[in-house]
Image 1 (cartoon, helix red, strand yellow):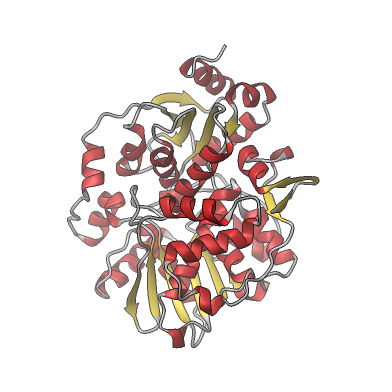
Image 2 (image 1 turned 60 degrees about the vertical axis):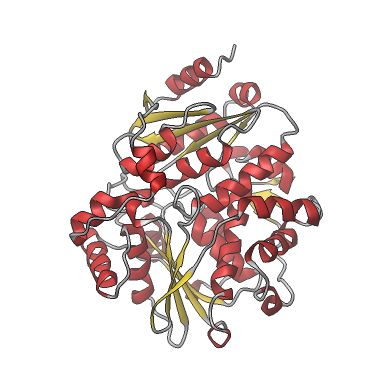
Length: 429
């Protein structure tokens, strides 16, 4: 697989190199030079999830990994379901929260862990990542106790749910967490600064597990095929997918799935009140505002790292601009969507409700409409119970994590302080 840096096209790398580097020169993300269509998509949809996913990833990655090795990696990473739930006529919800940390990022996190473990060949690796909620837990659990791997996670203090936080700040061992006095965008800025620091990169063997890493992104392509595979055969020809969007990695994966042949004819990338992309699509001016806190905190992102990849596909007309929608959903609209779904018999947390709202607003006639449930409602128990008057029972994974002490350390949004803290924690001279 040949990839190039979207900010410096002269930097061209293989899949293995892109996974190991993470972020390219000038903080550019890597993107495939070509996205060839799959043959016999309908036959692929008849295969089991893991088997189909291995074939899709083999098609995308090429001969850098043998089919047998890749099949084993996928079987270990995707060992939990992604059920499609029929909510109403022609309306479905793809539940991506049945993995170990109850969020969609388990798919990408676990596949990336398989890749890093294989590609590092025993050398020391430090995974540095920022999280707006669910990435931290998925990455922490995927790499927990992996030999020769340390994980450093930055999260905005007080701006993610306690359940999200406890799923990764209670592990210890090779998982090192910092509560940053700032926003998620501040955390992302620190990560980007670290990747510009050649000394730090060399001493730590630095890599990132954010969705900027191509291994995470490609893994997410697979569950869109799983969604369509679960539709009745007569409903697969035209599909509308609505994705709750913060950093825009998830909708980027959906677009890649469409480009290589999945019959997704409309995409909705619905945001909360952090509306940089919706405004950009209207006036063609990239003007991020200060990040606002919302019920859908995992989407509290004003500078989405994956937008350049989405824009590349739109610019090159791989996916039609006329079939791509991005709108902003207010806090009140989010609550109303939660109520609407609850009245329909489906319990949803705020991110899922935003995806539903976008699906309804951007509805494509005669299409099968799929909105994504990216997290278990119990991960946002306080807000869900408050909005809906419910009392959600906690899954064991959450209740166990909540009972443990938080091991995170406080950190100012200052790169020099981060570097000193990481050097001290990892005993780097």
